Image (cartoon, rainbow, N blue to C red; front, side):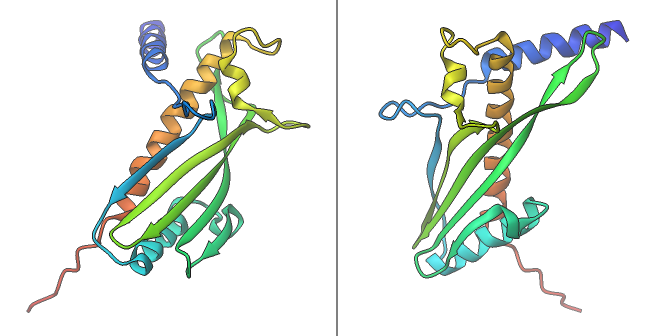
Length: 175
């Protein structure tokens, strides 16, 4: 059991050291953005994005803040619960929640996703970029762990989105 804990801790440190949140060089804000080329009309890509949202999020109506089929734009707001490991190696859900915005834009033959406006859910707005500043009075080494968790989770969501946006293969039942 102790060996398993040491192994998982070493793995986490390796992943945390390797994982880096993406910072926009112009705005200095944490942002994940990509334009993905894909066969389909604006409407079909928009509908695939809605289908992915409906299957990925537990409460898709509460997550989406805008559904604009005419312009092919979807806005979402959601949060990620951080995890913490106690001194015995037990992983627990933290009371720290990181909120983010997701914008999906569909156009003919492509779509673009943008994850931005990352902030810690708190009484007042706490932008996550403060965790990048080791001189900030509220910085602790846990901030690096939380940033690594955010990076891993957003990359998981992106992978799921890309898979969900792929054209579904229709199988015909020829009997």
